[in-house]
Length: 154
Image (cartoon, rainbow, N blue to C red):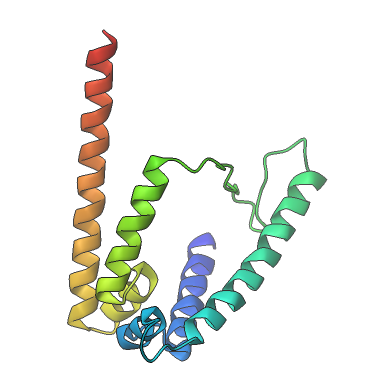
């Protein structure tokens, strides 16, 4: 059952991206073009997403307070892991900059990339491939830095 609802949520999200035009890199780049023909529609989509997500987070936190003696669970009985980090550090800033640069260059972020991939668009496939390579490089760097830190502690 959880897999069904995960797939349904992904389908609704993808359809929303398509209907809002956010799977079109030209539309996204229009939003980022502050000095030219700026297209504010992405800001409206983001505001709508924030409103929906805020409601969902409010509901999840309310359930957490209601059932303090138990692990927090979704309506399907699965564990909920709400974000707890509040620290703005170098890793967050560098990661945000890299994400923003990639988004600005390609006009695509991970959600729309999967929509484009599913639609058979080459740009989506190329972006997803680059994203997977980037994730793997990050994993290798994390292991490298962890082993370097262990060696310096010894």
